[in-house]
Each structure stands twice: as C-alpha cells, then as structure tokens.
Length: 154
Ligand code: ZN
Image (cartoon, rainbow, N blue to C red; front, side, top):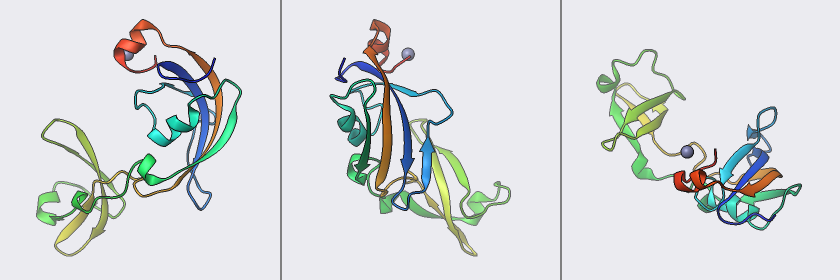
C-alpha cells in the first residue's frame, strides 16, 4: 500500500541541521504515527512521503518555507524587566510560556537581557532552519473511521 491522503503512516526519523547535529530522532522510541494529508507533519516532509511504501528509506532536505517558515521580526519583542519580575533566575536561552488571547500557549525564548529589558522571541525554534531528515517507513495502513473524524492517528 502506497502512502496517500488519509493513510496512517508510521516512520522512524532522524532530524539533523545543516551542520549535521541531531535535533530530534525517534531512535529508541516508538515510531511516529500520523494521518497523512492532514497537516500532522511539516508540509515538505509529507510531500516527500507521498507515494512511498513500507520499507522505503530515504533522505530529504526541507527548506524553511516547507518546514517551520522564516523567523518573523514581529514575534521578537523587548519586555521591561519589571514585567518579568516574578520569574526566578531569568537568563538567556530560558523558555517562558505565555497564554495568548485565544488561550493558546505560546513558547517564548529569552534571546538577550539588558539592564532594563529582556528580548523575548516567539518564533519556532526551527524557523529559518534547513532540515535534513533520514526517514524509514515502518508501516502504512488505512485510517479507522474514528481517526478520520478526529483528524489524527491513534
Ligand atoms: Zn482522536
């Protein structure tokens, strides 16, 4: 069975950056299962998987526009330190969570700290990165009714 929309696909993958450093891997864990064609994976990786079958192994290089996009300057802002006074041990590289108006949790990374303000960056950590995937297709099956209704794999 070939991968097409509304199949449930299980893959093992290793994600590395352009320097060859591993960013994420399913090695030692269960394979990642997702419902194909529903935006469960980044678009560039779903496109590479389209038409593949169980047992296929391949490498893919995905540009930022087909992955997590480019960083947006709008998502980087300076926040006065007084506004962050309740955070213990504020430091560069720290991840903070804030809740948006729609109730969605947003992750902010502290990019810099000056005497008066901290620079908080809400861009995805992989925004602007070219991603290198090594993928092996472990299983391809039809989705159940329930999975199709929910829009994700179980
Ligand atoms: Zn569900």
